[in-house]
Length: 97
Image (cartoon, rainbow, N blue to C red):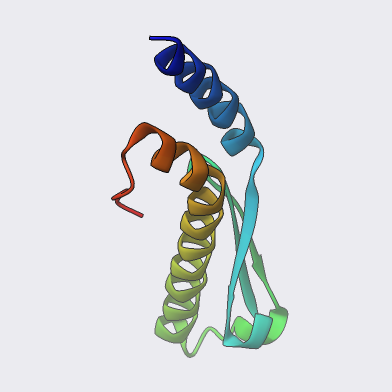
């Protein structure tokens, strides 16, 4: 029971920490950057003016999708690092990310 309470406290602390995480994904060699917070909320899209070509909108859309996917992978990795020790303590090693 004491262990369960300890895990609960650690989970609450982790939730606070995860909210503070900010990651940046990039594509096109940094032409497009996307920032996400620990809740997977899109905070910012940064576009290099070179990436904005009104004759090739599909390319820009693809770069944005790729940068977003990159940011999600980085956030999942950051969450694994934070949750890893706690997950193994609680016996939930097979997290979905």
